Structures are given as structure tokens and as C-alpha cells.
Length: 77
Image 1: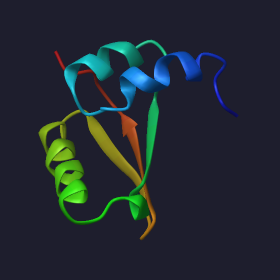
Image 2: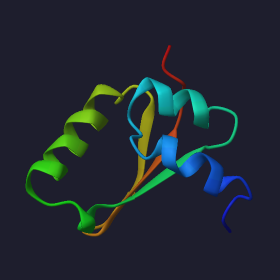
Image 3: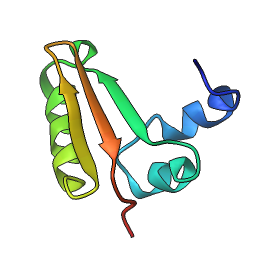
Image 4: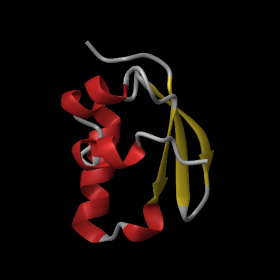
């Protein structure tokens, strides 16, 4: 089910893995799903690097060749 405010918050959280998107999502989101099959080369490298910065805040729940599901376990300061 898509949250009713998704269209409102989707553009600013598109850069998720940065402090601003964490702030927007804090009251609304517990899990984050990436369709990693859409990422190739440099864009995938950027995704992996950004995720590594927040390793203490994210717990990998499911990883398939096409998708990665993370639980946000704590909010970065």
C-alpha cells in the first residue's frame, strides 16, 4: 500500500541516504526498498557508498539480486 503522502514526500527523499531525506522520513518511514536492478556502474557504486555511511542506522532485512530491503533502526543525528 502506498502511503497517502507519498507523492508529496517522494521528490525530496529521492536523494535518500542524506541527512535531509532522513529528517523528512523520520516520522513516516521504517523500511526502505531499493530496486537495485535499476542501478548500474557508477550509480550503483554511489548507492553502495552512501549506504555504507549509514551502516549503523540501517539493518539489511532482505537482499536479492534485484532488491535490497533495509529497516531504519535509528535516525542519524
